Length: 169
Image 1 (cartoon, rainbow, N blue to C red):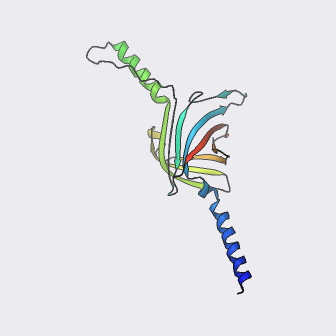
Image 2: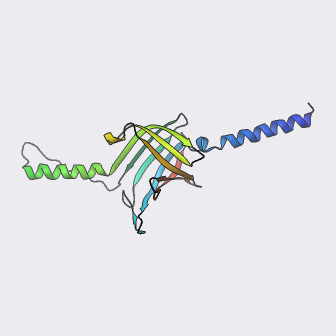
């Protein structure tokens, strides 16, 4: 093999490696912060499920592990009630407030799989803030952006979360 041929083969091998390194499975790992979560209803109205200024993180680790936490930034702690002195209405009010506070928080963990041909990342859930999450697969359509990525939620993919990449994982 002459020198030019060897350089050409090495160059082609390097290009092939570069293309393989830019697959969605290779690009996805990282830590992302939530910028927005908007759902567009069939009538065109837009709802922000966690408010106008939500907070969240999603981590996709190169090992295949993932986790996500989402919450309303404006959550208020439930009132403290002394069970020794509180009346029934105060206890009920504190329980209702605690339920509202908890409804503004979503978290789960597990593994992930990328189905590049479908443009889908599947979260295989091992556990989370709701007992109903365990053992469930959450499919998300992904779209890479210059800042990070969008994840859209089925069934109509009309609910879109915008994420900014903040670190490698």
